[in-house]
Amino acid sequence: LHHGVRGGMLSRVQRIESCLAHLHALSPLATLRRGYSVLQRIPTGLVVRAVDEVRVGEDLQARLVDGRLLCAVKAVIRDASV
Image 1 (cartoon, rainbow, N blue to C red):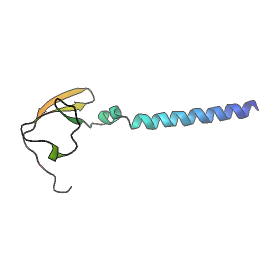
Image 2 (image 1 turned 135 degrees about the vertical axis):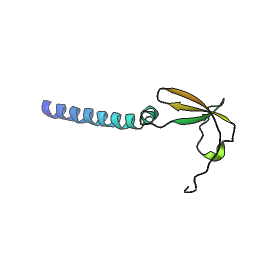
Image 3 (image 1 turned 90 degrees about the vertical axis):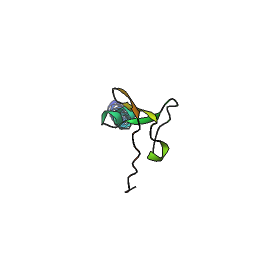
Image 4 (image 1 turned 90 degrees about the horizontal axis):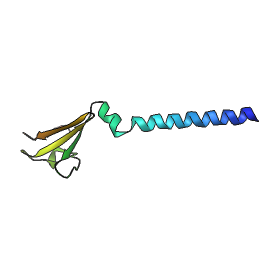
């Protein structure tokens, strides 16, 4: 009985560790660590998802893993393949 309970606990611990690893891989911070950034409108902080949402001359903020960049849009170039 003791071995069965211990085996069941080990299995549950391994499952929890696996779930935590998957959760960490999906976290926004892990995404930023892979080299991505989040582009946000100033001052609202709303996320920019498409080029049609911004205008030339607009100030934006790029959030990276170790800080932020304040950016000014010089041109809006739509990708023809999308």
